[in-house]
Image (cartoon, rainbow, N blue to C red; front, side, top):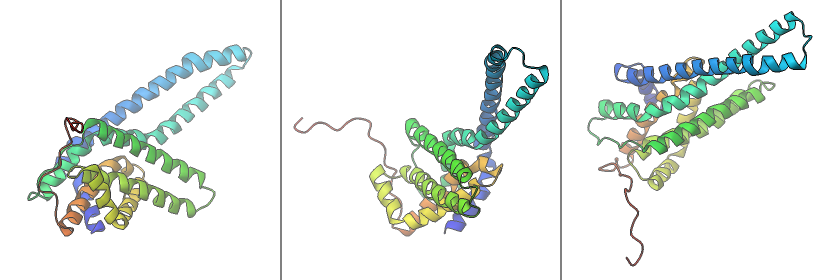
Length: 249
């Protein structure tokens, strides 16, 4: 079931209905990276270089050129490291669009899910950003232990990614307690699906599409597991719009 869902998700992310979310995600990521490039460059030229000039006024011109080259190289490395996290948090803003396409096109006989509240979706995007950063730091930390770093990367990210994205798919139909209980009943399958997502995340360039792939995979998985486990709720559970009345009122 996991590999079938993964195959469908991989097909989905390159399909026509997904292209709007894909191009919006990549376009906004590129804009953010360009803004960061100019911001950090301006910081170096207007703050760092003048400070170095005051600190070492007799610094030869070649040293100044070397410092500029080193700063440019460090900036390029930093932006390369930030590509995946930035694209992840931006793509996270379009996950409901992705889920809606999958539900409509692949499961037309089921009721459509409800979009998550904006704040909930934003929180999930920030969580995914933290997962990506944690996974990369873990991989860098364990570089001295070949093989172990790969296993650790897959296990840690598989566990975290599986939880986050399955919850995303389930919350479109279920209350939060029900979604967590449902995930708990299928925790092994969710974990291995998370490892598939972690493997996708480890592939350069392709990892820019990880949030879209992960959302599609987990929507497929949630739909199929729900069908095998008694079916989806007849209607998506809407979030409460008002607080319940106090006792005795």
